[in-house]
Length: 176
Image (cartoon, rainbow, N blue to C red; front, side):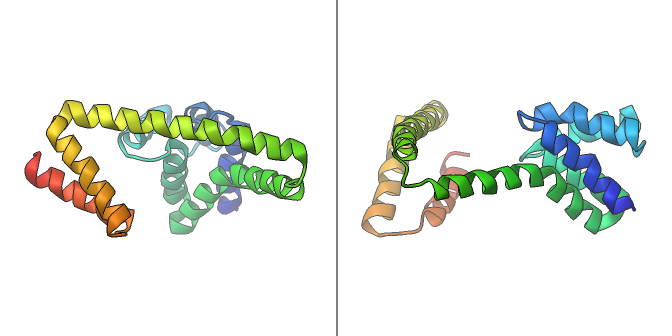
């Protein structure tokens, strides 16, 4: 029965928590503190502070921790699945509809309009990365990393993961 309770405690916030982790926090608190009484308000706030300190989505970290505390490893898996399941179901449904109507002129126009938007968003993100690198490492280090990364990926066809790893090592050795 505890696994069903864990599932419900995180599936419901996953459904109605539109807006991601920050919107889900009070919903999860209501379930685990108010409804099931698995934690006190103080315990929940400490767990929330720890979850905020770690990288990654807050809701999945909370679901994994609370699920583990209540039901062990299986409880953790159920909690993470339950918090992610509503988004997963919605994405599969929307992609199924999109695939079904992929030849529709409206869908083709929609995807044609989305591509430039994504390109602009990626460009803004890359510009932000450049500015952060320029401010932290300087123009010469940034230029070197840009040119080296471009050559390694385009000319020598090295996988981007290895280029990123090499850049991290370079930064640790020469920029620390």
